[in-house]
Image (tube, rainbow, N blue to C red):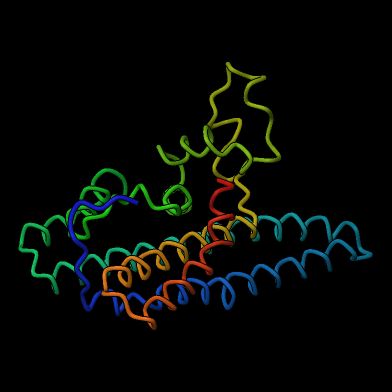
Length: 243
């Protein structure tokens, strides 16, 4: 991870200390229970002795699972996006970085604009974070879940074809546009991927804490906390490296 200038701790870093825990709570208290309840209903429908009724209800329920999963994915992305922009806004204010930075914050978008702003506010190369690729996927998925068809959907089809497990192999039908072979309505986001995306958010905030602590002078308590954070990031790093 590269830095452009000397790290300077601010009150914004203290506010952000629990951001990873908040994202984890959203997963364990909201996302997983909701999807588990829907899966339980799906099993019940599959075992219904009235096959005709169960078939129709099962179709509707499967569609509900897809829509709910997309809504929950969008929820995760929204939590992350609000955390990141809120953190940068707090940094700009507490470090008195000026009106120009504030104006850029008001219109910043994910990608080159955000990467440049992050560098100017925190002096860090955003893309050098181990969590960045997964966070980029989270942002792309969030855009698709919110807006449907568009550039983000095309990006997913090209880079993450496994999200359309029930659709034809696109390489066998080069004459047919991808939008028809893999429509947005056919996307499947497994709960395992949602966990991975939340883990990427957690890893990012752990790294931010670690960088802040490393900027302090050597103290036994600080060194011990850095070691604890390094230990926490090991399994998370293994997960994000799968992307």
